[in-house]
Length: 73
Picture (cartoon, rainbow, N blue to C red):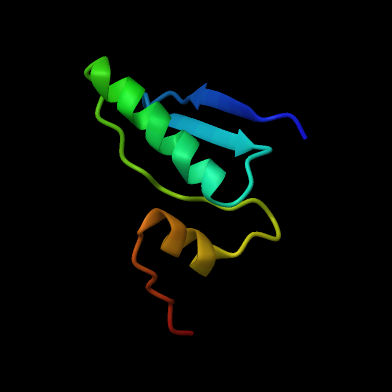
């Protein structure tokens, strides 16, 4: 699969990135590289991980160092 990063900027100025074709830690490494590049241009970037259907949220949170807080139901 071809590795791509699709970028969308919404009406609020929020930037949404979709990483496709990256496997495992490759995705985080590419996100880190992109964040450093944007920082060198003076842009501060926060991370909010959203999974594609079939993704594992707990695994993604661990990979990106985001605490997991399950919602009690």
